[in-house]
Amino acid sequence: MSSQMLDVFRDLIDRETDGPVLSVFCRTDPRDPANVSETPGWLVALRNGLRDAAARVEGDHEATEAIRRLSKEAENRLTMASAHERGRSVALFLSADGTIDIFHTFQIPLRDDFVVLEDGIVIWPAMDLLERGQRTGIVLLSQDQIRLFEWEDGVVNDLESSVYNLELGDWRQYRGAGGAGGSGRTVHSASHVDSYEDRVHAWRTRFIKDAAGNIAESTKDLKLERLVVVADPDLSGEFMEALPQGLRERVVTVVALNLIDATAPDVADHLDEHLRQAWREQVNEFADHALARIKAGDRGAGGPDQVVAALMEGRVEHVIMDPFFEFDEADLSNGVREAITNAGEETAREAAVEIALRTGAHVSSASVEEVPALAEADGVLALLRY
Image 1 (cartoon, rainbow, N blue to C red):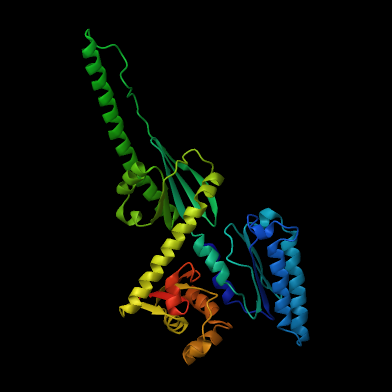
Image 2 (cartoon, one colour; image 1 turned 90 degrees about the vertical axis):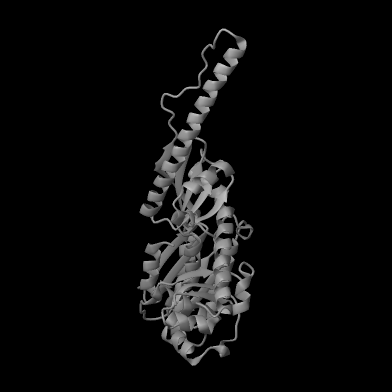
């Protein structure tokens, strides 16, 4: 998750403004079939969302005028932006008093378009994108080369300084004439071939061990949160064994492809679905673990009331939620209702995200279809620190 963007959001959630703030999230992904028509789906959703936001403030002339100005500005900014500037998703925050004006492009598609006008910014859709786009190291292996790429927010960068090659030095496979007898030549030649292959195997083993050490150092220096290993099964197995145990646990998936000569954009295209699947498996593991803790009476919490209460106490390590899951807010305790009000939010989900951001809790957003365990806890689960 981008620490820079997190710092921006921490500042924004505490920013006081004179008047409402418009938060716009558009799924501008050109690959989305809804966006191939003359009027793309994201623009239709934007206009519908702006219209609904205006309808909620009818009767209040000042608020109506503010949303009219903000709506016009938002549509102009998004339609005037180039396809490159819109990327696959866009977040736009505009305040009526002009103190907030942020346009941010993501290369990961939003789950859905979202437009809301409130007293402060709404950030949970952006937190979802940041969590799914967390920095990942991509290790490509071949028989004689290892390359390290950096993936973040759907973009792959080739780290040219992290290319390791197998050097055989002066070793050469023996091809000279053998002894006088035919069978002697065969044995003599075979022994040299075996010797050469043994040396290559020994050198390659040392090469992979050294490269694993270098990858470990680069992972630490670059503060990569996850690793993906791309190679044939034999090579990836050897490389995994050579990785330090702590780093081995950060490998979220191993992909059986040969991409050693691929460009950065090609690497991104080939691994896109693998990274999505790795994220789904990881967040399911967190949710299942939280649910198991709850059932064991251990450090877990489920449901909006319990999770928000734990967040208020700073006890949450990781919260997983379905932001669209409907629950009965009448079930919330008075303390949690007060926390939502104090956070200046209209919903428990946005209050939960903001409190998580303030207390350093990790946030994952997923639907109950993606993470079935959420259905057993009113759409919210948490792993607790204590």
